[in-house]
Amino acid sequence: MDRIRSTIMLTGILLVVFSCQSKNQPADTSSVPAAPLFVGASPLPQVDTASWEIAGTTLFVRMQGQGPTVVVVHGGPGMSHDYLAPGLAYLSRGYRVVHYDQRLSGRSAPSCDPAQITMAQWVEDLEALRQRLGVDSMILLSHSWGSLVAMRYAASYPGHVAGLVFLNPVAGDPALVQTASATLQKRLTESDQLTREKLIRSEAFQNGETEALLAAYRFSFAQNIFRRAVMDSLSLRIPDRALLRQDHLSRLFQDPDMQAFNYFQPLAEVQAPALVIHGSYDATPVAASQQLQSALPRADLVQIQDCGHFSFLETPKELATVLEPFLSKCAAPSFEAFGTNSAK
Image (tube, rainbow, N blue to C red):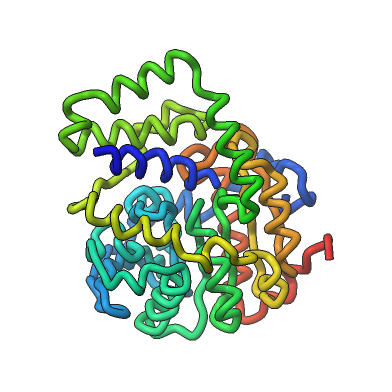
């Protein structure tokens, strides 16, 4: 059970780890018309699911809608697509929205060849998914830790990326990851610490009961959300054989390539437009999002006020008003009108 406790705390940290109108300033969305897909009256399209054999394992895939392909890369590692799907479902009114559970995550296979537990394999899984989807290019929409996968994919396969969206991405700089972790720790009140101890010492938690584990996950994320009242609506999933998955995933953090990789230098060759979303209350400092924006030649940064690490849950309308126009430009035959990074 110590491994589950470690997984919860680690995932809570990694989930924290990255203005269209004015660079590096809070976005003023008060006068922006509501995004049409977000407020659309048409019912959401049917959801199709599949389990695909990819590179020696099985990945769970969820598809909804038609149109340009948007592939969603969830956080974690070890989370699943479930917490993102409800808040992004409205996009399926205009796009084919594809969620997948990453290797060893969610409904995907709980084990695989240990030699394949590398960051490079996570990137190749995404490329294999693109090929299986039958598209030449896709828009990548990543959240939290998933931003690292999206960054590395874009650097490895820039010709297959039509656009990049980073929702509250983790910091690619280890020093800024430590800053985020320290901020979270400072936010813990004495009452919070007592609550945490009560949760992890409970018999239900020690027995690995699902509801107790979910409560612990929600508590670990609550320190990084501005509107705590919405935390109960966050859809979390405890996968089957969680301990086995964690044993495998621990190898990912032993991958020398993951530890030594420079996430920013290769991004200079990525010409796809990019949008970085940062919440003003996110424990990750805005400097991390600015660093990512600066590394990408065609990137803009939007700061959303009164928002933590879960913009799709905390400020869905504000997110939609900047996300929908961006996706529309990425899906157009040419995105030259989008402009370039003014910092370059």
